[in-house]
Every structure is written in C-alpha cells, then in structure tokens.
Image (cartoon, rainbow, N blue to C red; front, top):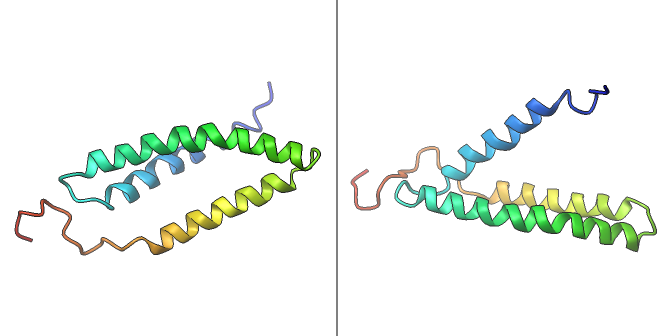
Length: 103
C-alpha cells in the first residue's frame, strides 16, 4: 500500500477548515455571523467545487493535454484570494456585537 500521497492529509485538512472558520466569522457581527458565514460557505462549495473540474478539463483539452492552462488558472485564483484577504478590514479592535448594544 502506497501512503506517500496521504501522509500530509491531516495537516492540509486542518488548515483548510480551521483558518477560514476564524477568518470568516470575524467578518460579520454576532447578530448575522452564522447566517452570513454559512451562506458564503454553502455557495462557494458547489460553485468552486463543481465548476473547477469542468474548467480544468476544458483548459486541458484547449491546451492539447498540456497543464500550463491549469497552472495559469490556479495562479489567477491564488492572486484573487491573496488580493481579497489583503483588502479585508482588520477586526482586531472592532466591536462585533449586536449593533443596538453599546460597545
């Protein structure tokens, strides 16, 4: 049994679940936090998870079997992600409670 591809799996799954959870929950106030985080998460899963394989197969066919198109696609998505994280407001000292509640 070849386990080389599975040895890093626990580390990657923790990073994919834990980091976005804290990051996304801080983007919204406590009165709408679960709804907003859930809507974003539930819409991103089918859109990104469903369309990415189709896009990658199309790019692979378009490039006659070369993976350069997929590499460019992943670079563009990474650039969008880095830009989005860079532009998000810092909430370290912000009041995230109920808007009607005094700070």
